[in-house]
Structure formats: structure tokens, C-alpha cells
Length: 383
Image (cartoon, rainbow, N blue to C red; front, top):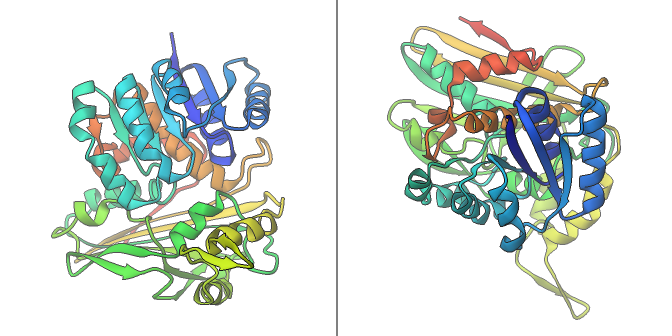
């Protein structure tokens, strides 16, 4: 008997995670659930074809309706949420009630801390809740924790990460490889970092810097974004002096998006236009989303995690590209596969019950081994 997995959200990252369950997770069944049944069915059909199986089952579910979600959770060993972050608190509660382990892609630290208030309930129920399991937050933080573990004198952590089109196009030199609500959530708000060993709140879209990668990538830019550090600043406060995360983009993207923001086009406060109440950010999502979904799936994920100490340092670096064989983008692979690795650990009982900080609750060495099994070309450089 294998494990039963539930994936909520059959889009880009959810389908990649489901594929990983089918390939590596000793799966008996993988339910791919979405509010749009056509998307769920297409996803399940694609994965059944890729893996030459019938284990992938489509379901229609509205995650806003607890009565619809609960029966699916009760029939699963572990659930992975690939829906927007603001659903994850309620879904965590439902998972605990159903006795189902739960992981999510997260991205909003305030929501994660609300999930951690469910720790005792989850622990009593024997359920593992693991928020923020994607790329960043997620993979990048686990690698940071691995570096801290490996150094005798860890002092600073610098995470630089971004998903980019291999062939950038106007107007922003960027293509959308995940939900646009997640993108603007990262871009504008507050970032939580460590400075001088203390948790510090700084504005996002600040502290612009240049960063170099091997050709053909070359020079890029990186800037502060929200959510990527997850709970790490609180976990490592007093132990690490600096811990920050910046998002990588092609040159010029920063100035264009900053102008859009300064014009108020990403504000959340409703305004009235010709007698109609609208939220500027929602209008931006509606107009910009289709433009940024270029249809070009050839992308690259750039990841660099530098952990420095008083006398030595360790750098993790990975460039991951769109996979022609499976059709998965680099962003789907790094985010979806990364989250699935944690969820598989939960299914196998390898995570402690309760709500976990992934930098503490996930065996980082084991995680790196699992990355290798999936073909990620992670370079580990010591100096």
C-alpha cells in the first residue's frame, strides 16, 4: 500500500508537485483538485500519460468551501496547498481536523505565524504542518540552514534567487511563471531580515545591487522582497548577524516596477472610477497578468545562497532550466518538486508533529540528497 496525496491547485506548481509524488513518493493515488475541473482533468491526464499510470485523479473543489475540502483531506495522507497563500490558514485547520499532514508554498510570513498558533492542535492530532516549502521561501532556506550547520563559525546568510525567461521580452523583461498575486505580494510590503543579530523590518523594493552569473545570463539586478526569509530571522536571531534574501531580475525591471508602484497602481485601497469602486492592484493583475503570461515556457531559475563565517564560507549555487522532456518549467521544478520533497517526508512520518519551521524541521542533508535524485545541478563551493 502506498500513500494518498492531495494537491489543491492544479496549475503550474501543483501539477509539478503531483508529478513528483507520482515519481518519488510511493504514491497509491494523487488527487489533483482545482476550482476549474477542466484544469484538474487536463493536469491529471497529462501526468498519467507522462508516467504511464492511472494514479492521478482529477477533482473539482472550491478551497473557500470547507465542506468541499474536508472529505478530500480525510481521504489523504498528506495535502500540498498550491493555492494562494491567504487560503492556507483555514486549510491548515481543516487538515488538522482531518488528521492529514499539510504543506504549502506559502510566501506570506504573517500567515505563517498564524499557522504556527495551531502548533499544539497539530501536535495533539499527530499532524505535521509545514508552511513555506517552495523555492524561496523553502529550498533556499533549507540550504541556508545546511550551510549554517556545516560551518563552525556561521555569521551571515545572503540568499539571491529568481525565476526568469530565457528570452526576455518587453515591457518588463519578465514572464509570469506563478500566480501574479504572489508576485505583487513579494514585491511590495515589508521584508524581515537579520541585521546585527536582530530581526529587522525593511521596505521591499530597496537595496538594489548588481549580481553576476555565468554566460549567457551575465549581469542581473537583485533587490529586497517580502516573504522569502520566512521564519529564519527569528530562528537564527542572536546566532547569525545578517540574514537577507533578494529577488533576481534582468537589468531595468526594478525601475519599471518601482514606477508602477509609485504611481499607485499596486495600491490595495479601493478608489472610485466613474462611479465604480475598484482596487488598483486588482486592475493591475487583470491587465498585466495576461501580458506577462507570454506562453514562452523556456525559463531559468537562478539560486545562490552564501553562508559566511569568521574564517570560512560555503556557497550553494544552482541554475535550473526548462525541461523539454517533461515540459516542466524551472520554476515549476524548483517550487513544485521542492515542496513535494517535504510533503513526501511528512507522508513517511519523517517530520515531527506540530507546525514546523522548515529550517529546523527538515533534515537538510537528506533534502540535498533528494535534490540530486531529481537531477538538480547544485554546486557546493567551500572557501
